Image (cartoon, rainbow, N blue to C red; front, side, top):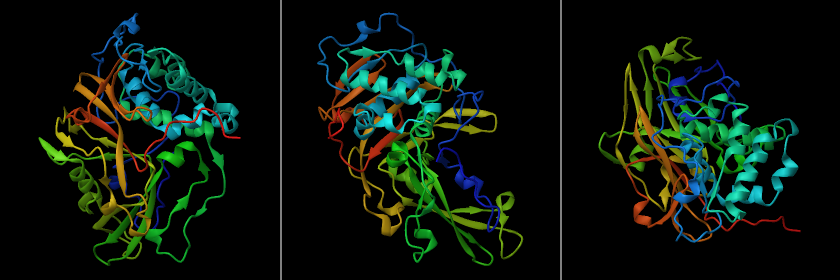
Length: 396
């Protein structure tokens, strides 16, 4: 779960170009810089304010989970992600109830404990604004780039947070097939050797069918994912379904991308198609707005239309696993600006008020449903089940 598992070298080898579509949880070295995987952002256009509380709307009632976050100097990327995670009730409840304490791995509990403190302040505190300094400090000890006052990529920060929480809260068990071996290989699901609240909520599984176009030999490969990075097929306007269709369409690997067929024993043109064999409870879509063509870099400002309710993933899920094919939007990360500088904000639906809120560091305001759809969306969080209000204490 915590790292990308390479595909075996036999059969058709590693289908790297296709797997690049999928973002995994991974564990970089402590010296790995936290930079945008698609572009390197310069300074953020947000700023450090020594009196952030003055930015809050004094007329805005304070509800649980509706709390601003202090900007610590170009940390809007962190604040936006924390607001989205704060809106996911099952995750919040896990920490507010204290369940995380019994699962903590002593050698890596720092980040999870700091995350719990921040979630507690955001949900149970009486302040309109709190500081995430304790969490940034804990993560900064692992990723020094986070302690610098430079802009980072929100999508990569999300992966780092989920990875560290998983590492701190994971439990071990034997790896085994979830479904009976009598099922076709394309329909089997695997239980990972490590599980946590992160895997239970965010982990999904893709199944790749790989067909040699010469001998028609077909093999299947499974790949775990936590974030799906979706290509944007249009320059000006498209829908989220267009992006999904582009991601799940069949790819033909030719020329230098040919891979070795175990039956032909030579490299052959290959057709590859992905489907979801395990749909996560929370599915996160990363819209690939930062485009790199050789030495040229640009931001795609395509207006992508995404539904607030009833996102239908049925066409992309293996038929026997279509238990929760429809999803509802619960949070959005927005990116303003371009590759040389920008700013992140978040839209989140609160499980207490059932209203949408805009979070811009310490600035918090309620917004109508019609304002959630914007052309600045960068990350979309969808849930297959409605959220209830988090329980603060464990049931006896």
